[in-house]
Structures are given as structure tokens and as C-alpha cells.
Image (cartoon, rainbow, N blue to C red; front, side, top):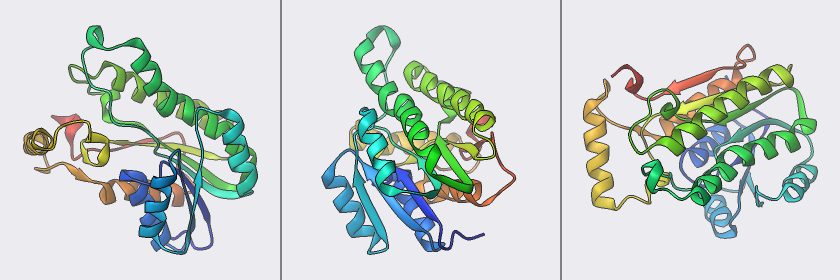
Amino acid sequence: MNLQHRKVVILGGTSGIGLAVAHATLAQGATVVVSSSRHDRVAAALAELGPRAQGRVADLNDMAAVDALFAGLGEIDHLVYTAGDSLLLGELIHTELSAIRKAFDVRVFGAVAVVKAATPYLRKGGSITLTGGVASVRPQKGWTAGASICAAMEGFMRASAVELAPIRVNLVSPGFTRTPLWSSVPESEREAMYQQVGARLPVGRVGEADEVAQAYLYLMNNAFATGQAVVIDGGGVLV
């Protein structure tokens, strides 16, 4: 498997799993474009990724900006969507509806906007890989918003795989992974959470971003995979 001479665009590719996907695709010879809504994140990612990576700043809540992003990029081979702010945790009755809407705007409607804008530019044999989460099948207390987002992403992925064929559309569903998405949790609590959750998993630890990134590579490279939600969670859905 390799992505030699392929053009890969990663929305949310400046940190966490998205940045790990950028590193992995570069290692396979791809030309990589990472995008974020913040200039500082794009600059920091490019400094880490090196001269073969490109960066773009785009507000995913602005359809005109998303359209302009892909018009400027031209033809691409693979689209990866990992964009998302810190996870929204908390019981439904104590969570403002505006906060839930904001979370949906980036994680769901941002993905819809990106797929809509990017599809005309995807070359033959191209693919789209979205991001969900195991909360869609194993929600925990306080995860109502997150579980709903993950389930919405899976439904959107499957419908898109049918509608956009022969473009392949898949989704990676990570479990607990050590990434900046958990930055809203204080560090001491975060490390304790990683230890506690990891101890319950069959593999005995939480995941790392570079491990999850391998699933995105698989879905980009496998020309027979479409409409699939690939779970990478250390066996969490089993326990």
C-alpha cells in the first residue's frame, strides 16, 4: 500500500488524529494539504510536517469559504475529515442547546459542507474518510451529545457511499485515544482517566493517534472498501 503522488486533503489535519494521518500519508509519498480554522494551528502543523505539506485556513461554518477552499485546491485524490473542537461532555439536562448545536456545526454540518464542496474535485478512484466514534454504539452517561454526533456521522457516511459511488466513502470510529480533544479535562484528571479506561480495555491501555491513523491509510488504499465504519478502540466495544 502506498499513496505515492496522490493528493490528500485533511480537514482538521493540524492536531491529534488528523496530524497523525498527515504524517502517515506523507510517509507513503502523498502530497498533503492540512486545514484548520486557525492560522496559528496551520503554521505549527506545517513547521512539524515539513516542506512537502501545504496548509489552508478555512471556516467550515462558511459554505462560501469551503467552496473557495476546494476550488483553489483543484483535483484531489483523497479527502479526510477529522475536524472537531474539544469533546462536549455533560448530562443533557445540564447542557445548553447552543453548545450542542455548536458541536454539531463543526463535527456534522462541517463534514456535510466539505463533502458537498469537495466531491466535484475528487479524481477517479478517490475516497472520502470521515471520523465518528464508538460512543455511537457504546454511549456512557454524559455523552448524549457526542453519541448523537457519532451516530449522525455514520448515517451520513453510509448514505454518501451510496449516493456518491463510485467515490468510496468510509469512516473511522476511534475509541479512547490520547489526543488534544481531551484538553478540556484538567491534566491530572485526564491522565487518571486514561489509566482507568485503559485498564478496562482488552489491550490494557488507551490508543495513540498514530495507531488510529493507520485505519485511515487502510481505507484510502483499499479500493474495495466503501460504506464501512472501522472501529479502532482497543476492544472497548467488547467490554
